[in-house]
Length: 341
Image 1 (cartoon, rainbow, N blue to C red):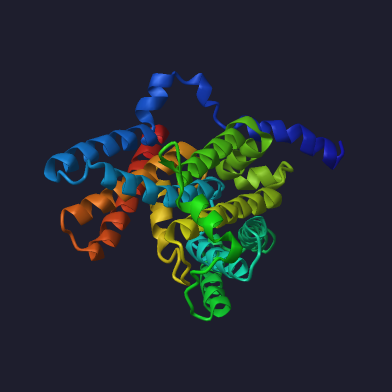
Image 2 (cartoon, rainbow, N blue to C red):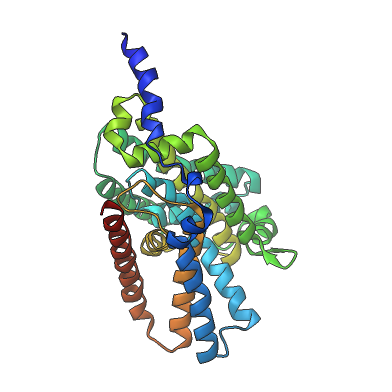
């Protein structure tokens, strides 16, 4: 039998190892899913904070929570397939910052909005794909590769901006502000961007061969490689997807803020990973959902907002977010141990 025949025969075997969750009753899947309990936590926390602080449930504050969480939500959606394959990307905040700076500079130079957006999308996807190339073909640790990109992208943002703030967007001034800071039917435009991103990822993960390959690689990368799945191309594609959504986030942030600084996106890496993991994605690979990325990010923003309203020093935010990550990992470990038993 030729190697091609072996590959063709083995691929279905690997893909069959990807769990068919549709065979499990919906109510049972719901009760054991981390996404369900995080959703419950969002409502419980919201109710408790509303009683403690009357300012929480105001239209203005809830609108701010909605607006702020969407930026992390989009980044977390981009992080989800990366975690599913067992990778990680801690450079998303720096890629966001560099994309935002480049967008601001090209618009300031008089470029039309469509051209600025095209350059920004290509830059984000290209930086993500470069991470994927190093990880896939040189088999370098994802943490170290993206740590290097974190430093490189942040440095390049300083270099190309010369440390200056960009606040003049030329002929695209009104258009970029309307895109990033505008509303449609009273809802911020960034909300629609997040929902479209989540819907696109959900369909890709559940309805396409790409999605099946992503879960297969996350479940058993060695078996996936031996049976001929395009492991390297899939790795490149998920990192490119993460970089692309970082670029999308930068567009809406720039439009909302009305200016660009080289510190844009700084420190977002922790919140993105926290939101994704709290939403159920496994750092060991093999599981993650677009909805989980959104609801986990919402809980992080809700917690941050509650701490501010309670008068807790912002310096404590990292402690609470880091503790949430640790707690989520412990819960995942307990769940895995129960399954093994």
